[in-house]
Length: 505
Ligand code: TYM
Image (cartoon, rainbow, N blue to C red; front, side):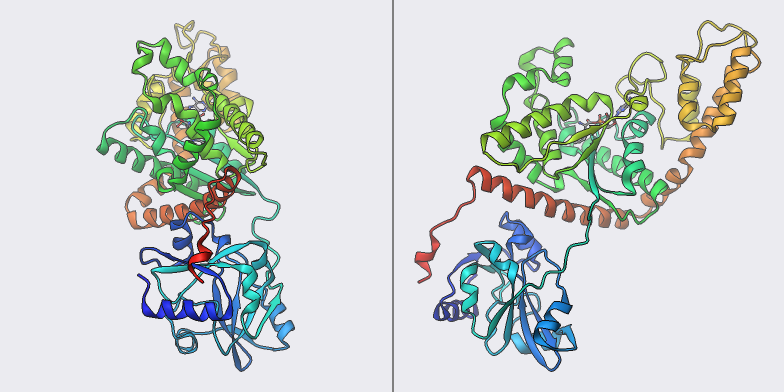
């Protein structure tokens, strides 16, 4: 609602000659929430800070998303102390609520961040949480008693750090198996320490097969706990480099998919494995849901929104990364832009395809040939015991083969190398049996996943913590995705620059 205070402020701006459009919205108390509602990035805003410089209050209007270098302000004003006004001081000086500061603060010296002028229009506060003004930045220089300074601190955040991104679909029952771990999650963990990481639960993707409210919810929650437990088990509880979120908490994935639909030829999708596999099964083409057919476009949107350098996945996802690159190139070429960065898959050869316990096909939930990570010890024991070894070996003292023997394949990843070497030799000589090597595999798995299994129990008992991680992850992801989406909208002509100035005098 445009209240009397906002109307008065608008008149004051008009008197000074600062053009602005009045935008009404629901009650929103943070810059991020407003920008998100307006489909704009934080860098499209201009928050005002009220500060105390020695004995005088000043207003500092900065570009959203930039960090202040207070030293630069002190130097320019020749003051020795500079701090943010406290709540009482803020209200007294501005006459508006904390968080609703305006750019025009009569009587105060106003410092204008040089970077405000990098953009033609910026959104700023109005004193009301239900209204935002969209300003023409060139007019800021008309603010009486104002001065332009370069106040931005050089950004150190993520400097030089490459970005990785990956997703896992909560299909089946949402539980992870050692194929997912070795093929994707472990790759992610191994490079997480010196990379900026985005990892998400791809719940929108699960809709191609999971079409039951309770099941989808349960699967997503299970997968969330599984992934977080693995990350925390190996990286510690803080996860400083990791942004972990649920795909559906960032609706921009779906919006970008809609846009990318238009630069994706049918032929590209017809060649996608998931669709082709479905066709070779019992299903008639007319019955295949469009979600499955379209799946690679949603995956391209998932990736391109965050501009990652590397995407750690198993080999089954390689084609999807290639399709993503293809779509990104088509978009960039069509709209004569370079908004999208072409991602590289990260697929180490030794874990590209982890075979299942049948020793024949890729480990997968659907085929039932998996060893899980978080199920009960009894279940894992059964899965280990059913693992394919050497069918040519009839008696325990027959010399056995280790090539293609899945117990040894898994032991190469999870066992202690000297012990594995010794067991291999003994197995080939016929001096150790299947039972013993399987027992060692079982013990090695429990040992490897002990910290993660403990984290799993802790997280399950602490939903508040999990919720907080998801919320902050989603906020960070939305912030990144919003930046890319404003560039995308700009590139294709969806940025509506209404001719609103004629309405504001
Ligand atoms: P999903 O959920 O089927 O599998 C998750 C990850 O585990 C890998 N993987 C394997 N790697 C080696 N051997 C195996 N037996 C094995 N089984 C599974 C998969 O390759 C994958 O990396 N479409 C994706 C999820 C997704 C995504 C994304 C990934 C959605 N958007 C964006 C990366 C980037 C999928 O269904 O994976």
